[in-house]
Image (tube, rainbow, N blue to C red; front, top):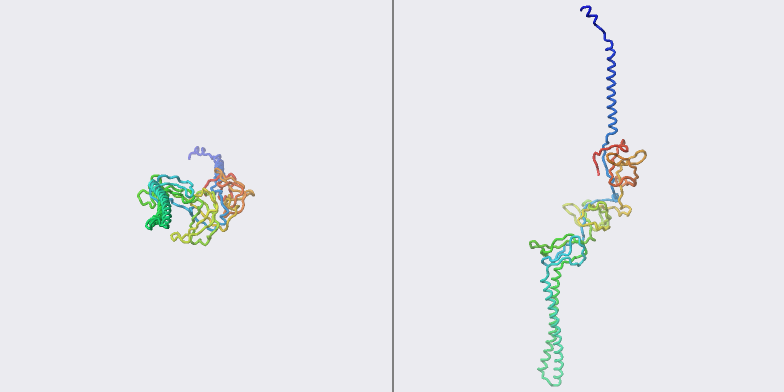
Length: 405
C-alpha cells in the first residue's frame, strides 16, 4: 500500500464513547414502557367493573318456619248449581248477567208461558164453577129438608100417602148426595188448579240459594229443555255459586297424607293475590285415593273471607304445625344471609344504583329460613349484590353477570 494511503487512516474515538450511551437510553425507554404498561394494568384493574350477581330484597312470612307440607289446588264452591227449568220452552226473559247477586227464590228467568197460564185460568174458573154448584146444591138440600119435614108431619096426620112421603125422602137423600158430589168436584177442580199452577211455576226459573251468577249459558230466544236433547237447545240458563262456601281443594301426595289431620291450621296463597295470605282449616278429606296421580283430595275451609277470592283460582296451601298468632302472620322484609357483610365495623349490603355498588347500613332481626329479617335498610324489590367479594368497596363499578330474583 502506498505511504500516502496509510496517512489517511484514523481511529474514531467519539464513536466508541457514543455506543454505551445509546444502549443506556434504549434501556431507559424500555423500562419506562414497562412501567407505563404496569401502571395502566394496575389502574385498569382498579377501575374495571367487578362482575357480580344480584339478589332481590324480598318479602317472606314467618309461617314458612312452621310449614310441614305444601300442596297445590284450586278454589271451588261447595255449593254450586247449573240452574235450569223442568219445563221446555223458549226463553222469554232473563233478568241476570255474570256477577249478579241473587237471593234464594228470586225469579231470574222466564220461559214463554201463555199456554200454561191460560190453562191455569181455566182451572181456576172450574174451581169457581164447582163452588157455585155447591152453593146451588146446598140451596136444594135446604129446600128438600123443608119438604121432607112437611111430608113427615103430614104423614103423621094421615094427610098424605106413604108414596108421597117416600118421594120427599128420596129427594132429600139426593140433595145430600149432591152436596158430597159438589164438594168432590171442588176438590178435583182445586187439584187441577194446583197442577196448572205448578206448570206455570216451572216456566219461572228461580235461584235455588243465595249466590252470585258465574256464567250465562243461554240468551233470550233460546229453547230451554231439561235434557238439552234438541239441536241448538240449552239445558242450564245460568251457573251460580254460593260465595260463602268457597274452599280449596288440594291434592296431597299419598305418602304425605299422614301429616294432614282435620281442623289443622293452613295458610293459603292465591296466584292471583300473591301479596296476601289467607288462614284456612282442613275441613275434610275425600276418603279415596286417585290411582292415576297417587294423591288424596283435601278440602280447606277459608277462615279469612275476602271478596277478591273467586272460584277456580289456583292456590298453594301450606299445612302448618300449629295455628299462628296475629304477629306471626304479617309479612317481613328479608335479605339473604350471604348478602350481608361487614365494612368498617358496620353490617351493610351493597345496593345496585346504576352501575355502582352502594354500601347501605342495615339492621337485622331473627332468621327466617335461609334469610334474615331486615328491620332497617333497603325496601322490598331493591337489587343487592349477591355474596359481595371482600375487595368490593362503596361506589365501585359493577357489571351484572347473572341477575337472580
